[in-house]
Image (cartoon, rainbow, N blue to C red; front, side, top):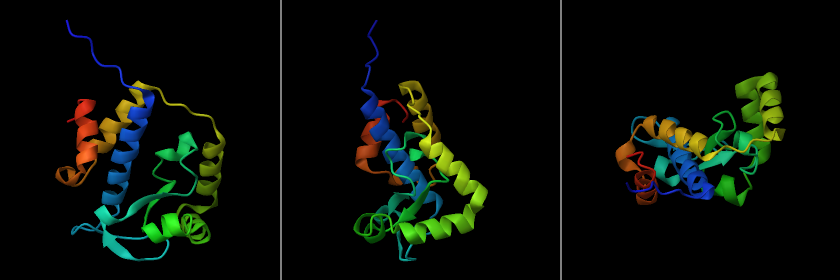
Length: 149
């Protein structure tokens, strides 16, 4: 009997980052695939926008949390380091003070997801994609590797 390949945790994290980014950008897109940058209102196709985080991706507990992430253009996400003042203001308006407090507490918690949990999240976010046929070749390879597709 052939032994199942045991991938490194970092491979699961990379695949989850990719599928979550696809999911989040598609979630906020209109029916034609266009999405507005959360912080500057630039409209781009979901394939040309990024997944911005209020709390850094280093905070594992919020890294794949939908409350922490919004679509952002490259200029805001990278060039303006997340355009934090605008992001913070809009997020507070959207989720309120209690939501911000919950998100902050979560960001300070210690979480290290195990490979089975990561795979479960990968499978879940893939199942939620609006346009799974439009995923990147890299993501398709990763999902095949983990037998998600």
